Image (cartoon, rainbow, N blue to C red):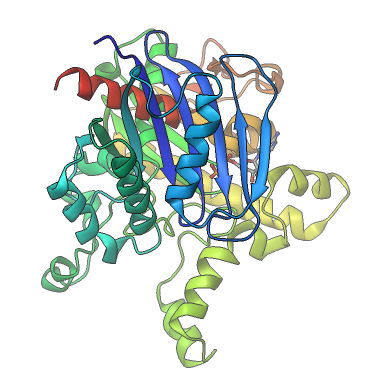
Length: 402
Ligand code: ADP
């Protein structure tokens, strides 16, 4: 294939994040973000990495995603990298929900679009925005292969015992209620990168991946295949997150409706946007929480303890699910940067073979690295995630086969 560039698009309801990569060496040529699409003060921030130029910012009205993508293309074109470039091999789209249907990256055609649309009831916030991004990109370059890479795909290997909730089977099937899991692109990338760090093939390694960003999820990966993950029908389940509660008794919701007289939408907002770390202590940034703890703030300390307690429960649970664990990998904003979180999550797990070396844990680096001592039975690793590279790699591999 002579064209070697892939544009990765991550379209939200009012934002588009993008990266342009050259797949000959996986280098990044440009990246950027459009925010507040549809408002008077839409903002585009573009960083032309290939030319080494300074970031450019532009603020003004952008009516819709089409205006946003045209503005992105115009910025790219200033460095000869526009959407109309013959060097562009494909566009890879992040799509949040692929249901059970999409187990792999998929070249987008009308039937694929219709299926992503059919999944809107299980992903009402994300899939419509992803679809808008895809439709816009297709209208601008109808001749170019476009690929959907699904957040859920990596988790479709989960056995029924992990994927099914213990509720009435007919009701669950009618409404397609089951554990789908999210952050799959990251879990796939990080589990493979962890095997590489250990010098072993992914098929030979069992890994617990802890993706700790503002959203957070854990997964149990046996020999390169996901066997369990903490997020469920939606990203609300599982770990304590920046603004989401994670696991709790579902009856809390009935209680809030009956006794708290709250509406469905109010409870949705409470659990997704006003819970987790921000609900517990008023901050969702781990840096700020650590700063407050250092100043003796009790609410911040309790929020941290609840966060760590849940994390530790999942490490134990996935240890039991896997039976044998070769590595535990920390990734995303908190996992890659917050040494105190890594130390606290693994503290007391020596009997499970998990130990963190204080000095190694304190090292700051963008590279995958081990933070466990050489003799430890289970390797503890910090593995920076790269979802855009993974989307570009999968997209390029697929269009190379067309
Ligand atoms: P998102 O889920 O939005 O993609 P990220 O993976 O970028 O999130 O993670 C964002 C979070 O990472 C921030 O909210 C903050 O809590 C945490 N974080 C980022 N940098 C640091 C740092 N240096 N130390 C501790 N936590 C950090």
